[in-house]
Image (cartoon, rainbow, N blue to C red; front, top):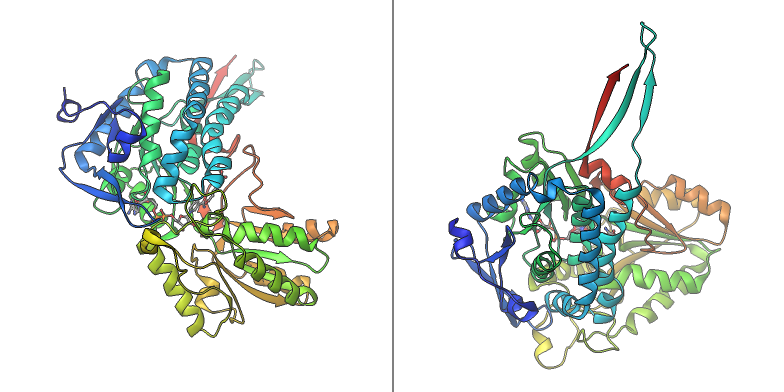
Length: 503
Ligand code: NAD
Ligand code: 6OD
């Protein structure tokens, strides 16, 4: 028995996880042995939710070794049918415990329950089901080759699991983005060690209970809590027994992770930051464009990597668009997640609020006209201490203003007029990022023409965040490396191996 497993203790449900979030290593919950922990604080009012144990080198090593050993155990011997049946059971159990996952996600993030009920938790379950279906149906290739003796050769390829996958996650859609990687990784037969964001430890912890309940073998799914540098994140991405690193988060962190993974030639899949544009043409359906842009700018308090921070509007409809978006922003209801009227929560933390507010200040210094917002709202009672900011719209900034060029990750956007389609495309593409964009037009030819010119991984026309999980997802330029989704996830989570049989 290792020092870690000796400290293992039962955990039962959200209440226990909330009080004390433990690591989940080799099928058991443990405090680990660093003796270090931090306070998980609510973004709603800065109150303490509970403690989170911080993992160090020993915890990461135990988790990675458990994952490594599990590849050779029952998990590694399972048929695809057995494996995918288990993943279906994981999805079902998330749905059975839907309210607990929902409460956990809203505790950590403060996001409106209505949002998490429709997006975060259902997608957490769907990510297991969808990739289980993909792996059951995906064929591999075969080639017959001619040989000088006339007998020929037959080549066929096999998809093998890559091995131990390190999954490093952000805080904005914690369960959704974690399972978006754990789902395909497990469907392909890998094992995982997850490092959740330090801001959002709860749903990854609860998922450990789900894995045990449905009988996923120990060591297949592991969680180590901690921070990035000199903590669990860095130890995990640098561990020599990790065979691949999949990461979602900031571009600068992605660079550090790439450096860590380069030692030992481990592949990376990186889903990074964005400064996404929306192009609104005068021939759009204005109601749809306003409704979609309201969501793309303000959903999840602007903390969505795909969210819009730059809006370009064709001049004849510019004033009307700005006025209607302003009215929409001012009609948003900030409040408690459980309040049905709430459609805007707080930012994730005081630290992130400081960052967003520094951009609100900078916008004014850079010469913006503040159309609405720009400050801190008055919140009632204890919520006055939360990480709240006002939904904010600016106009009048120059194209090289930092507020127009840097990712803010808050409920805010800059709106600028344009005169021609060429100008709009050039403005949209004038960024180091290339994650997503939205194009609003009722002209079909324009829709195709403009979409094809956008330097992004995902281009929505007359919609935003409309997801089909079979499609490729990822960013170009500094928004990422690789594509995940449907069969594209297999590129990262499996190793293709060719068998050549001389006949
Ligand atoms: P972050 O990069 O600060 O942190 C992400 C994770 O990386 C956390 O778990 C953190 O502890 C860990 N980490 C930090 N430094 C590390 C290091 N040196 N080594 C290993 N791990 C390390 O990102 P965040 O603030 O949690 O999330 C917001 C960012 O994520 C935004 O930039 C957003 O655009 C991006 N994001 C991108 C996508 C996408 O799909 N492209 C999705 C969601 C969020
Ligand atoms: O929908 C998805 O699969 C996905 N990865 C969304 C990312 C959202 C970023 O915040």
